[in-house]
Image 1 (cartoon, rainbow, N blue to C red):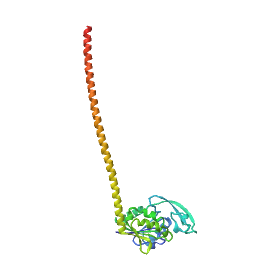
Image 2 (image 1 turned 60 degrees about the vertical axis):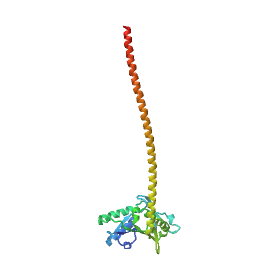
Image 3 (image 1 turned 90 degrees about the horizontal axis):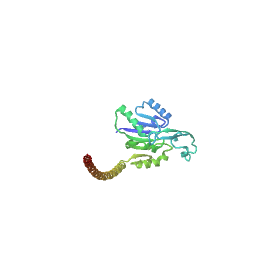
Image 4 (image 1 turned 135 degrees about the horizontal axis):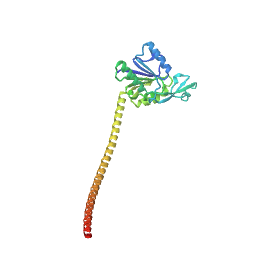
Length: 272
C-alpha cells in the first residue's frame, strides 16, 4: 500500500516535510501560500498537496480562530486558555472560520492522485499534528482513520497540553505509545483487532435487537390481522343477515302490493 504523510500545520521550510506523498493542512492562508511557493521552487508540487483549512470534527462546523503575538499558539483556544502558562501572551484578534473535516481533505487528495496516477489504493497514513485542535482533526478522519498507523504531536508549545486527551482517544482505538517518544503513538495490530471484534459484537447485538423489534412488530401485525379477519368475518355475517332481511322485506312489500291490487279489484266489482 502507498504511504501518505498528513501534516497539520505547515513547517517554516518545505525541506522539513517528509519524503513521498504529503498532504499539508495549514489554517493560515499566508503560510499556505508561502509553502506552495517554496514547493514550486523545489519542484515538489507534484507530491505535496497544500490546503488552507481549519480542521474540525464535522464538515462545515464553525470555529473561532484566535491569533496571538506568538503565532505558534494560534488556534481555537482563547487567551484565557494560555494565560497561566504564558503570562506575556497577547491576543491580537479572532475570526470565525468554517471548518473542514480531514476526511474531506483526504478525499480531495485521492481524487487528485486518481486523476494523475490512477491509483485507487488506500494509503498507510502517518499523521503529524502541529496546529489546532488535535482531537478534532482525529475525529474528522472518518473512514480514513483505518489507514492511520502513526500519530505524532509535533508542536513545541501545545503538545503536552493535548497529550493526555489524545493518548486516551487513541488508546481506545487500538494505539500504543511509541518507545522513547511520549508524543507519538503507533497502531497496535492486536489492540486494533480486538476493537474490530468488539465492534462486530456490538453490531451483532444491535442487529439482534432490531430483529427482536421486527419480530414483535410482526407478531403484533399478525395479531392485528387475525383481529381484522375476525372483524371482517363478523361484518360479512352481519351484511348477509341484513341482505336476507332486505330481501324478505322486498318480498313482503311485493306480497302486500299484490294483496292491495286484489282488494282494489274486489272493491271495484262491489261498487258496480
